[in-house]
Length: 149
Figure 1 (cartoon, rainbow, N blue to C red):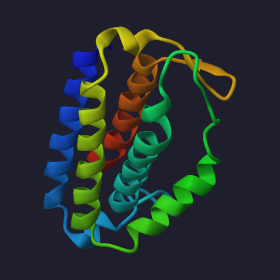
Figure 2: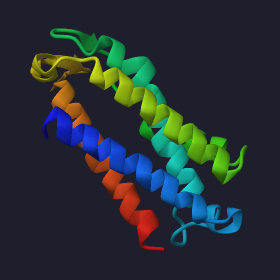
Figure 3: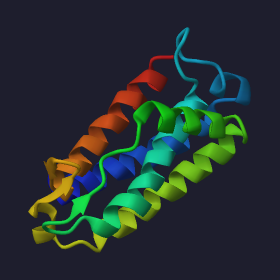
Figure 4: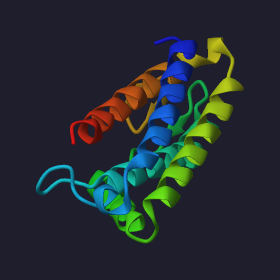
């Protein structure tokens, strides 16, 4: 994906977040399928990965940098789900929107040429472009879950 396509995908995500404000608290806190997360938990999951990316990834996404491997996914995701239960869905939506807007601001400041320079996450070769292409795909995966309610 190009930088502009990723920017457009993020704008689409923000519009989607806005559209979810029509869900009432009960619907927002009901799992979309038995044994699965609720919309509130899904949005907090996305927001917490955004926060992680802002703090732990973007500042170090420079050519040749060696970033730590990802944290344990299950533990990270469980913590995000717990956080979702500590606030209203509207608060989760607001938090998610803020985190994504901050990511967009950070990405806007990165020149196009930097998007293809290689850095490492653990032993895995990565670029900003590939990282955020996967990011958009991850968003889509969860958007489908909530949209199919």
